[in-house]
Amino acid sequence: MLKGEKVLLRSVEPEDADLIFEWENNRDIWQVSNTVKPFSKAMIRAYATSDQDVYAQRQLRLMIELDGTRNAIGCVDLFNFDPTHDRAGIGILIADEKYRNKGLASETIGLMIDYAFHTLNLHQLYCAVLTDNKDSLKLFQKHGFEVTGEKQDWVKQGTGFKNEFTMQLINK
Image (tube, rainbow, N blue to C red; front, side, top):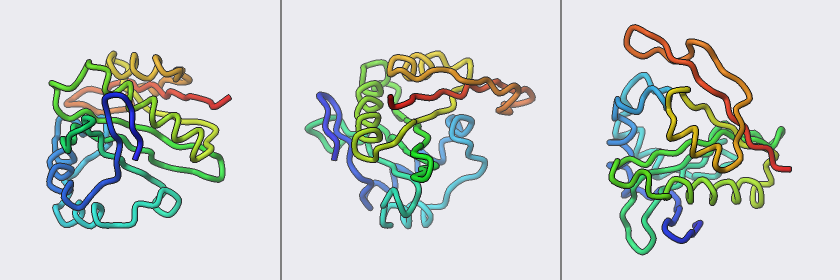
């Protein structure tokens, strides 16, 4: 468990399955999560009850709770964990808009950076942010992530395409 001033990051529990099912099947976020089909409840339940060892699974999802409550407001993921090259991707979801722009995502990213660099001893974290997602761009830049590339026409949305930034944070 990782604890900040406002948030607590904890492992996924079996009782989180229904909430994760709702979030993963929200088509509004599919474009940023590279999801193209719904997840079944069985798949989500299997994940929520599985061994969530970052070294075995190559990913780690932590639930974001408001400290002092059991109210999960989102999740943060390390994915494509690569211990050979000491890197991982990072992504975050604050599911309910009423909890956005309150510093909770920023505190969560800070806790995950500390965990990734000082517990997992990673050399770098990276993320992908749509170029028009100003809030996410600002969030990651606040924590030292730099834009290191731009993929043209990378994400299809409707009948058009959007560009996507690659951002990296190197542990110096």
